Image (cartoon, rainbow, N blue to C red; front, side, top):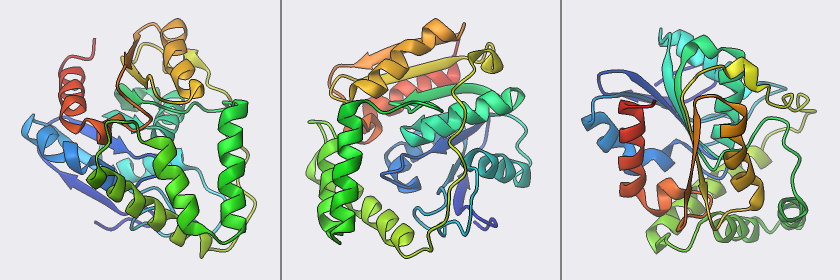
Length: 256
């Protein structure tokens, strides 16, 4: 469907659910859960962030959270449950902190957090990725992401799918003109999120950063609970799609 910035899909009938993808992926990462969630009675909205999938790279500084707000305004969706994976989870937290009245619940899968400072191990990954891109080894940078972010349960088809999505993101973003980005969002202020029900999922095979973000949320938010998946890496919805689909349906139907 058309939108000034964000390509997106809308399907299904019932309470609105917004699916926000990881920066390694695009909206296709939700394909494995798409039909299950529609059949469970939800209206699904899944955008590509700018510079991912079918959305063009940004032409200047922008806010992903504001893009999401504008998309929901255009779709006349006042209130929505938000499911966010990784970077999409970080955007979900920023969106909920800025417009809490629009968020019915939050399901965060290995989410980042606004204002989080990377650990040495995560910073080392970023450095390695930058080095490969500067050396014009885009295929190497893609493989680094596939091997880093997918846990041991991801099969060959899943790895091929992530390879395709990450390569698309690199191709779109590297072809665009560079500009100074907006300052990173300020650190999360839990009081702004209030009593929104939150499910914070982490993976035992993921970076400590994301495990600690998920584990910390119940200490900051009154209606948050943490669930660590012992089998998961950073992208559990792709690693065990059916299990995560069941988890999401259960939470979305009964978030408290």
